[in-house]
Length: 432
Length: 142
Image (cartoon, rainbow over all chains, first blue to last red; front, side):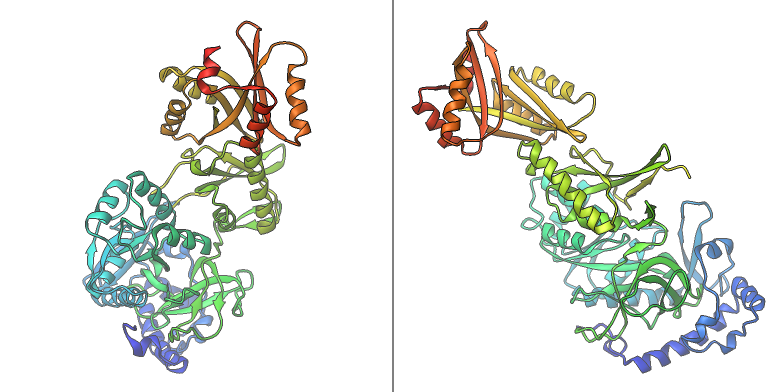
């Protein structure tokens, strides 16, 4: 049941001791980077006095912009000789962020993934088709090595090429997949187009959903479509990649591996810690990585802490699903809205498909918000009134979910662009 | 029994063109067509000589399409004919969900298409009242 029982069920006091030891080691590494050396000097912080998770709060958070400004070597704490790999997230605004790993760093990261995969039930008898892109993106290689560590047969197929994916799923009787949730929904249609029933003709039992925040409704739909259990995988390249937090079989929040990361959930305005249940930004410190220590990284991911012990026996804190990003949030008529809220409503209406788009326009100083969604051919029964009622129902549900009333457009199937990667949902055409 | 094909379409230029081009390619003849629309989308209903063929062709195009039985009543093209039908429906408390009519054979005959909730029941009521109901083939024999 446990990959490492001692660590996974460690009591909270011992966990704090372990974290404190690792924080001290991390400070030794941080001092060697030009970015933190300058920061400590500027802020008059003596890193030797930072010894516990609470002490970390004396250090200002690190942002994505800080990481970019440190390109290429500002966060490197070892000599390049010790570095065996780098991962990089391109970002859309130009300068990439780079994370370096020593051989030991990679062993530690791989172990976190093996722990996560073992937790959701993956064993060496499994065949694991890893549908994330390999290369600089961490989702591919990270999960790959975790699967190998467990001893599963790993198929490093990478992202895209749906026909080939389906061929492998069928011919190798794949039992576990790692997939982006929006692609999981799309792929099930493509599987049906090949006259295969994803439930009966495939052997899937575990689906790892990663790289994209998604709703509980999306998970349920994926589970129904494939007849398999789906688990939420949380990670970000700045914190290695996948394996930061992972759902256990109880599927009620994700355990964040606190032996490797110090977790804070902070109110984005005050930067004060949030109480359990209170939504805030996830802020993480890597404490088990030598080459690229990152202290108090602002993830821009919004989640809340789930209180109380987990029935699985693991003591590592549980975080909720990502409820939104501080940066894909948009404001309409003064209301903060996250695409995930729209997604939740659409998923509850089986007459519409899973692909959708939110378009924001400004005409004559008036903003409009339009939710475009495709109707499903097999649930069309010929009547305009029924469609109109469906449209009105979706609109009313969106109103109660978001507090604003968007327009809802029902589109013909397969008219919205599909994506094999992260789907862009919000198209904000308003000129400020 | 006659068969009606309904197609969902977004309300934008070229939708009718796409559907009718498909019918032309498949050599499907249209006897009647109605379009209703609301809030950016619409439903196009057609009565054609080969409903199954039309249905298959539209579906192959990926369009949301639905085939259903409707009642097609043969009437003489003269005053009072529609009233006769309406009276029977009213007396039997039958509500019309959708309906359209067209004239055939150089103004001698007309056809009224009816969509009601209780299709078989309505059909037998109309037949009992002496109305002639048409099949797909019969619509085209006119």
